[in-house]
Length: 409
Ligand code: PGU
Figure 1 (tube, rainbow, N blue to C red):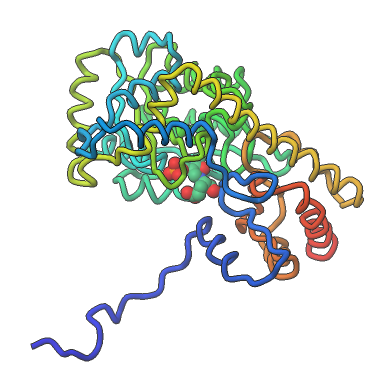
Figure 2 (cartoon, rainbow, N blue to C red; figure 1 turned 120 degrees about the vertical axis):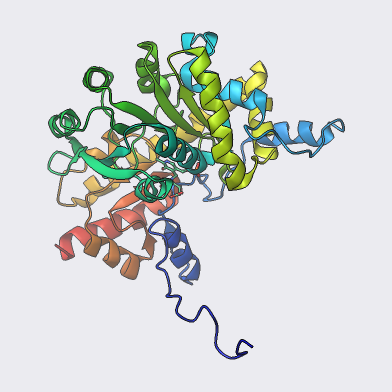
C-alpha cells in the first residue's frame, strides 16, 4: 500500500513565473498606492480600467436575447461564419485566395492557440521543421513552436544601436536559412520592439523568401492597433498572399476587439489550390480533436455578429481607432515628459515605435530599480505597455526613467 505520508510529487520543483504574465502576479502583490502595471499588453482606459468595447456589449446583448441560440458543440473547425469573416478581415474582402477556395481557416484558442495548431500541423506535414523567429520576439513563440515539434532558430531583427530594424542582418540571416524553412513574421506592431519593416522592405523580404521557398507564418495579434486602420495593418500579409504563394496566418481578437479572456482567434492556411486546401483542413481537424476537441462558442459568436453587420463593423473601427489614438497620445506625453526633465539620451524612438509597446532600451538593472523604487512593473527586457499608461501616471513613469538612467548604468 502506498504511504499516506509524503507526496508522490515531492520531487516537483517550483517553476518560475512567466516573464510577461508573472509581472501582473508581482504587481498584484504590491500594496503601494502608486504602483503602475506596464507589463502585460492589455488595453486600459484613461481611467486605468479594462475596456469592454460598446460594440461588444451590443453584440452580447443580441446573442443573449436570441432564444434560438443553443450551446451545442461547435464543429472541430469552429464557427463557419467566424472563419469566413476572419479570413476576409486579414486577407481583404476581394482576396483571390478566398474566392478561389484556397484558404483553410479554423477557429482556435486566440492567437496562442492558432500558433500552436499551425506549428503542430507543420511539424506533422511539412518537410522542413526549422522555424526562424525574429530576435527579439514575443517570449512565448520559442516555447509554443518547440513544444509543437519544430526546431526554433532566430534571425536578426532589431539593432539596439539605431533602435530600428536591422534590415541587412535580417536579409543576411534569411538568405542562409535552409530552403523551405518556416519564417515567423509579425504582421504589424512587432512585439516587443514596436519596429516594423516598411512596405518596400517587406517587398524585398518577400522576394528573398519566395526565391528560397521559405514559408511565411504571420502572427497577427495587433491588426488595427498599429495604425488604427484594419486594412493598413494587414498590408504585409496581403503582399505575400497576392503573389499566389502559400502562407500561414494566426489571428487574435484579444487586443483589437478587447476579447482577451474569451480566447478567440483563427488559423488560416493559404494553399496553392482548392483540392490541397480541403486536405489540409482535414488534417487540421486531426490536430485539434485530441487537443481540445472543438473551440468555445461565445467569443466567436461575438466576433461574427460584429463582422457581418455593416453598422456594427463601423462602430468597431471607430472604437479601435480611439484605442490606437490613445496609445499614440501616451507616446507623445511620455516623450515630452522626458524632454522636459532633460533625461539623458535620445527618446525619439518612443514616438517612432508602433503599436502597444515601447522598447525603451532600459536594461535589466534599470528595470529592477524602477520596480523597487517607483513600483513600476514592466518586463525585464525594458518593454513598456503604452496601453497601460494614462496621463496621470506619465509624470511618475518619467521620474522613474529619469532616475534609472541617471543613477544606474
Ligand atoms: N502573438 C503576439 C505577438 C503577442 O504579443 C501575443 C500576446 C500573442 C500572440 C498571444 O495573444 P492571445 O491572442 O492572447 O493568445 N502578447 C501579450 C499578452 C500577454 C501574453 O504574453 O500572452 C503581451 O503582453 O506580450
